[in-house]
Amino acid sequence: MERSSATFALILLSLCAAGCATTAARTARDVNIQFSSPTKRVLLVGPAVELSEVTTSGEEEVRADWTAAAGEFIVKDISAHFAATQTELVIANKPSTPREVQLVKLQGAVERSILDHAYSGGRPLKSKKGGTFDWTLGPGADALRQRYGADYALFVGVHDSYTSTGRAVLIATTVLFLGVPAPGGRQYGLASLVDLRTGNVIWFNELSTRHGDLRTEAEAQRSVNDLLKDIPL
Amino acid sequence: MRGRYLSGLFLAASLFNASGNVSQAAETIVPGYQPRMDSDEAGLWLEADQLESALRQSPQHVADEALNDYLETLVCGLAGAQCASIRVLAIETPESNAFCLPNGTMVVQTGLLLRMENEAQLAFVLGHELAHYLKRHSLTHHEARRNIEGSMHLLWMLSGFTLLPKLLADGWLAAHDRDQEREADADGFNAAVGLGYDPRQAEIIWSNVEQEESANPKRSSPSLFLADHPTNKERLAAMKQRAGELQAQMQANNLGTEAFRAVILPLRSAWLEQEINRGEFSESIAVLQRLIKSDPGDGHLQYYLGESYRRRNEKGDNDRALAAYRAAIAGTNAPVAAHRSLGLVALKSGQKTAAREAFHQYLALAPDANDRPTVEYYLKTIGE
Image (cartoon, rainbow over all chains, first blue to last red; front, side):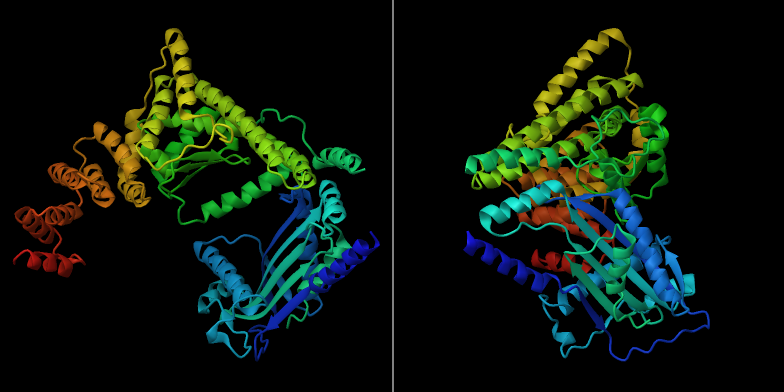
């Protein structure tokens, strides 16, 4: 019994060593932030937020009330971040024209490619050897600049799940009988900053943690700070 | 010791599986209904809103105004007082289905529209899907599933990962779903007949489905224990009985064939192309043969029947394909490609003269065709 507790503690520790490292930001080379007008304007696309509860059997059940609350906290915290540098934030909740829809879908595709090829565990591309981070949506992104008068766009998506009581009981059971915990809730977020003149992704961040709580204002602020860590704006 | 753990934990799990916000046994939705933000249902609606918006932005969303107006009007009639809560989305896919999301989005797939013979049949299907929405079946299904799976998950683990608890849970849930289907069948039937649609059309839908599925020897039917829908045969029999009972009482005989065809026929050829590209040629042949009964002179239908035979390529299919292409060319609006396909199959069957004639006809009708060099090459191989 003693031995298995010690093993469990070790496993937890090793899980934490891997899982508690929360962010992994990447920045393109030679980033030179320049605004074309004295009103420094940044477009926020989304944020796409979804909060859910992990059921006993491990499925994620979307919670509308938590999602709505977290969405408000996140917008507020991002606005505060830019207000601190006298940058005006314009929010585009939903793309309205087919062109914008395509750009948002393209951003999603580029984001998946970045995760697939530029992050640990991914397959590096031969064309991107040497550690340069050069990803782009292409000059078509200028359509968003024309529409909103913003030189940069920040795309944000956050997914957060919480262990239900039933799941907690199940996790305790797996620890007792198998010595390892079944997975519970998890927070995951992605943010990319795009120069709308060129379409280039100039900064990208992945946040992944088993801690944090976007349902409360203070914790949400901490998560947004982590998500925007090292953003060059 | 272990036994106490087992029963204690199982009890705890079943108590906690249901989160604090379980809605009471779902009642029928009322007009203007909005779920409470902290309910399970609000979560389902949020997911449905996201799916609805993705479908609206999808290239598969059919923009045809006449079709959308037609479907809106039909669904509105079936929904009665709930009309304002329902939005219809036509989605281009060869899959034959329709479903209503928990937020009131009715999704109608073009594979279904291709198979329906008249408005009455469509009304029975959409009435059924509407009943799922009005009775909030997705919510009760969701909660039933969460509760049974939660309890069974724990039992499954504690029983040393034996299959039995999972199998029991799946079987129980499937039975629950079949009951929902039966209820939706009954409600949908009543809604459509209430609007004057011919009650006999409901059973025809199921005999058509049965005919199409049995044409495919590879299709496996789900086990009775795990099927989440009642069998086609059961549904056919139930519809037949309902229609029989009603026929004596009322004069419901509206088919709505003309209105239906006016909207569907102009769009049908694109759907036919997708239908045969599913690669289930025996099923497509069953569908096309049925459609041809109503429109024997339709060159498009005959052409795609020929294509299904050509691509299925079983014994005797060459001759069947040739007959279908000839019927297509003799009919109205046959695509020019019917001549090319006729040439190809004639060539394959060793009928050089017929092949030559068909290829020439194709090139005469489509002088700028992209595949002109290919067709000329074929002509060369048969001695020109």
